[in-house]
Length: 439
Image (cartoon, rainbow, N blue to C red; front, side, top):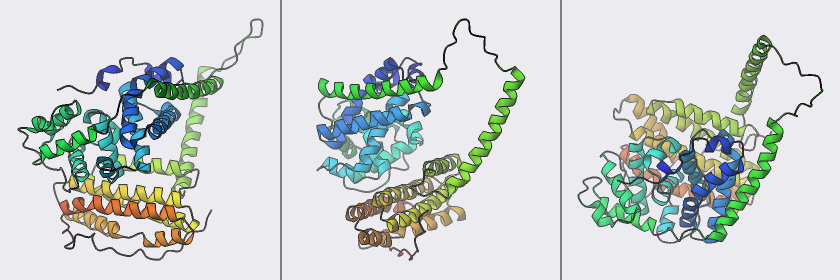
């Protein structure tokens, strides 16, 4: 079975390290090798040339901003760049009809997964490190997402889906869905899901035109030149002049002492920043540090039940932050924080689904997940309405509706009976909480 070209196109191991120094040819090479795929994904998601170019340019500049902290290789950069675009599109949810409209109803994670796997042609082995999930889980989540795009529900957990993933690859490459799905035993609706893959592939438009490619490339390289000048200024000292007394460099022992002092200071400063960030709100300078620490805590939790418990706790934190932002009249931050809350609850559900032994710990975590998922955001919506944040209120309502659709099949798999009327599970009202005073 043929694999996406990203596995072999990036042969120069120095590309990323040179791009991190903002060397023009290295950045240009990374940009050129990903530009076609990037624009293809952006155009498929937006359906509009202008919007696609804006989305692609934003992803390129964001990648340039974060490249100094990037730790992967050229192929990893390619996937990361596509994810930056898919993530930005997931937050904006471009309007559309038909398949594009159904795609926009997915959760952020499922939206990114479908965009990268089907539209970006990235195989699950390359997606695994970027999405922090094992290939079998990604295949199961892809099946779930494809069913939702098809207007149905039901998870993909259980059967071995490697053969189905191979059929998805064949359809991506242009094979007939019926032929690709012939003989597949899992999932049971494989031919229908492959038709959905073909419909998604139909969103992919024409190759990028030379004028658009030139504009995107020029924007990227102009930003690179600016950053290169700043990088050289920070990393290069003034040259010595012949005839001037030679500079005396510190001894080895002095260097060791200096490094030891610097290490102690780094630990102290890091501890202080960690403590400060734990109290930071979404508008605080320390908030990104707080979120980084939370992500690290989730990543080191190897036990799925413990990880689900932590994700539910973090979702509760996001809920309190959203209440605070709504009370202050910051609608955009409110919607962003609630979006993160819903993603954490969905992730907790997936973690619990991956556990085979349903002991008392698992059942307690499941009950707590159901309890937190049932809480409605009516108090937040009232605050947004009272402060004139109508657009943000509508966004919060949309996020809540999307979350209810996404969580329903997960909760059914976890053993929660589906509502007889077809509605959402009974919801506990949010208690009245006095907003914290602004710092």
